Length: 88
Image (cartoon, rainbow, N blue to C red; front, side, top):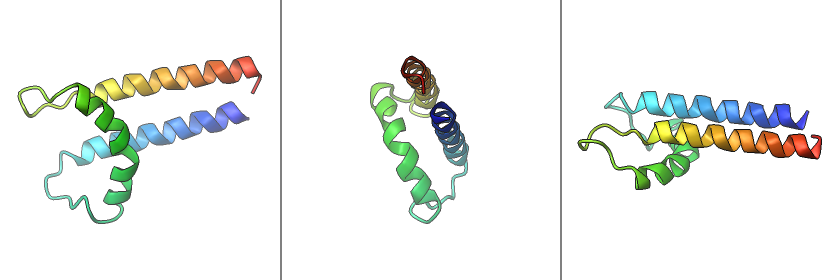
């Protein structure tokens, strides 16, 4: 039951990240208006970790979300292993 809830939270966050990434392709979005500001406040702290490590290629192509997805998958796996050990 707990692992299902945790996996659903990870799935929800994956969806938010995908939406956030697609919305960056739309140039006229006001990121300070709702619901975009809320989405940015949820996703950017995680993405900024990888943006600080991996600069955009050629100043335009940001591959940090790809690395962020890999890291999130590893984190989800680790959480599932720990929950499995604990029997949750």
